Amino acid sequence: MTRINISVKNLKDVVDMLSTVVTEAKFNIGQQGITVSAVDPAHVAMVSLDVPKSVLSEYDIEGEEEISLDLEKVKGILKLASGNDSFVITKGREKLKFEIGNITKSISLLDNSQITTPRVPQITAEDYIVLNKGDFEKGLRAAEDVSDAIRLTMTPDSFSAKSMSEADESEMILPVNMLKEIKCNESIKSSYPLEYLIKFMKSISPNEEIKISFKSDYPMTIEFNLGSESPDRIKGRFLLAPRMES
Image (tube, rainbow, N blue to C red):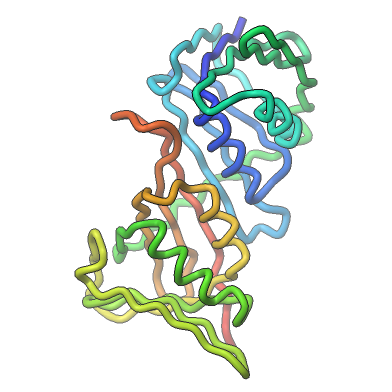
């Protein structure tokens, strides 16, 4: 029998992140931990998460298997818990049981054949920046009422996020001394849909560092960590297709 003990924070972070692109997801239970990938219906954004078994206080599985869940139902169970609690999760034949304190609640599993697991593309961009999530989010918020797209520019000396409409304009410029790290040899520019980035950023803790990599008119990759502070944390990647400009 599959039996997992996961903190409320870790489970909430995983569910909230996946919910930025889908309402249902297929989790792959393996010997080294849990992996899950999901792509939005428009195939614009993808989230991929790796939950190592070291972040779980109990991880007892009989073998590799897949579990598909309605994320809205899991959110309902999360409302029963406080931040310092943890869930004991066990899998039956057709249901997943959640135990927390003196409360037990079970939800039906979805048909695995009805949930597609996207192939995570091997997108590589040698140029990247590392910065505080909060700094990046400020630039997105400034652009929110200007346009539905934002243009990112990376140079050897700075990173900027700019949005324009016929009437309004916003721009955030971060010089190299405000970045944790930068690797860039020439100016790179690419535009992305703002809505996806804002939803995604909501699911990352304010003080987290993120790594953003992209090329001109090329998909963006954002690497991040989730969950409780520990040496070995939940690793994630967010991929976003560019907004092509005429």
